[in-house]
Length: 399
Image: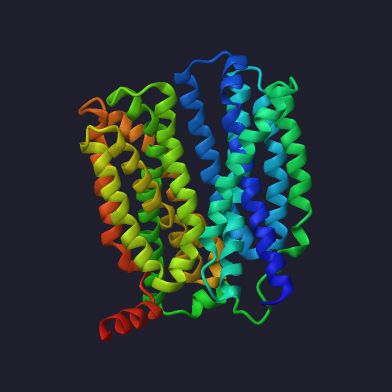
């Protein structure tokens, strides 16, 4: 392993932490901004849709731009823009200015998200072994860092506007420092993606396109499950099992902790067993865990279920993003943007879908939908099958 490659990997970790920190900083300041602007929870929920629309649009724009200009240019630029845009929601004075601020911040965050994931794919390819899951684990570290920074700025008396601006200013510096360590654009010897597409057989293009659509659909399902857990895990313990507010908070903490731990371990497991096995067994574990949550009336079973759900989901999204990026190295950014974009739609839709189902069934019974989606993900894991997977299976069968 050469030093430039190690430096590129460290730089990628920095940008994942930066992305998680900027988004987490917005989240921890939501109550203060909601109070300052003077809006209800319902109005805030509607405005959050604009954050999602902006992010989805940014993802689509950044994918092709990263393929064309290279991550060394696009990732730092979007990191600077995302950090600068973080200050905007804190400056909003009314619902209209907050709407515009969230649209811009979402767009910039989506651009950074896709461009850094596209670069992570190139780093993984250069390493010749799985490293994607560890990058996604550091995104969660950024969320923890955001909560610490939010507490620090609040403790010294900074209002949301000043606190978010301070974190944004720090983020601009962080975005610029590791820029030179990123991998350069694709070598000139690589085929031009447009010319290659024109020369490629139509059947091959259709197979690649179909594979990306299936990966995007799986990302939608997995991230819908993750979004549902983010918003409903705590309410499940409080409203269904009668836990106190302090005890109920540990439901999400348990889910988030096992998801982070799972992502830290997933790369080693992928190297040994293959990405298909991680998606299959991860989906199965998630299905078992959320079924515990849905059907068991005991507190210990709920905690165990949320822990299994987080552990099972932890390695799924990184494998889907990695597979999308490797499907066509010349179009890694565009393909990652398609999978990430639809996945992000699922993340936003998850809480709403479960909320709608609660009009028909009890909250815990609504989680059966997540069981179904997790099981489908496990059943469709064959989309990640590679030649190395065949080798592993043959070796296993010969023992």
